[in-house]
Length: 331
Image (cartoon, rainbow, N blue to C red; front, side, top):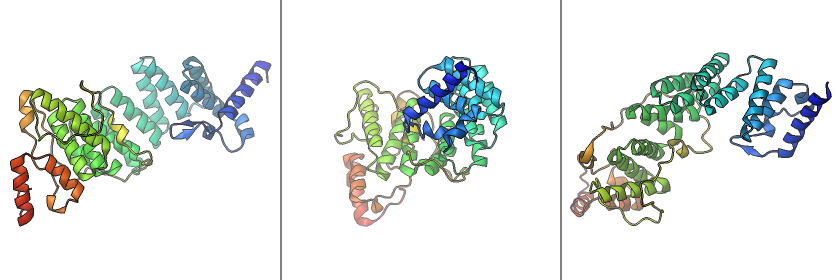
């Protein structure tokens, strides 16, 4: 082996020994190697792939591209190298080339959740929600237990305007209250603040400990108060910090629990309340007083307190009469 290549191989090994088990998302850098370091030295494709990933993570994109291309020369069917080059093309603004590579990776490994998620995520970044949903559904068809795919499918459907189909995907991926929270975030970022308020309220009532939902409920209500468009009664004072200006909504994927890495085979479920976009000041009047599917008679004390705080004095008085009589018709 020429001295230059030998030196580079030794450098790669030293780099990975030095980083040890440093975390890089859901995997460690060390996990890119086998349990036998000697075997890695005999596997140039794997070695160059590991070096490419390290270079990409540290921002050395030129070296990363060179190493991904070297790994591909070792094996043209290396989907991780193809995906790596696709990511670098996307970062460089070469969207057509990035799409070609993402599609190529899926063709090389059609049953891989990694390739299906990557292509679906690419379509999401391009606001091509119909294509994103179709690709993520194809991924779920071969790996139905993958909660990451299901969660992103929920995002694609919701951002594409299909709240009814998105809701059960979120429920299966992250849970009932978290599903309302995710949908609320998407509605909020789309400017449908009255419907977002309703979703945040439902999330809080279903799960009072879901602090981000309470924070965003308070935030939306403050915006409505400022605009005179309050759809619900003002909430009690919250300890959560609220920015004076309209805050930037976090991405819905932030609600996905770290442990939720694998889902349930899923199919589009029972009907859920549809979200009807509104315009102008009419947004204030569309939200129902009582959140869908919730029965005050079965709430615990904390949930009931949250619920009462969302009502006007007249509605609160009516609720107490109903609680005493046990009559909740129309709820």
